[in-house]
Length: 75
Image (cartoon, rainbow, N blue to C red; front, top):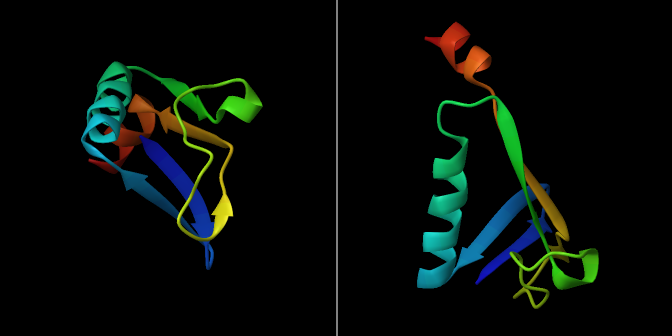
């Protein structure tokens, strides 16, 4: 499970072991590419994010970008 909330201006992720594995897999899929992945709740047509959160405002759609050009310019 991955749950994402917006709390006091910060995005918070709550992960169980399966959620950690899923997030690592999504991040690995970005390696070496200029692309992005979408993670959404069921209500938004996805299955990656849980809809029950411990506190804060539910994040229904999380987009993670990978920009290898940005990474190269920061080195």
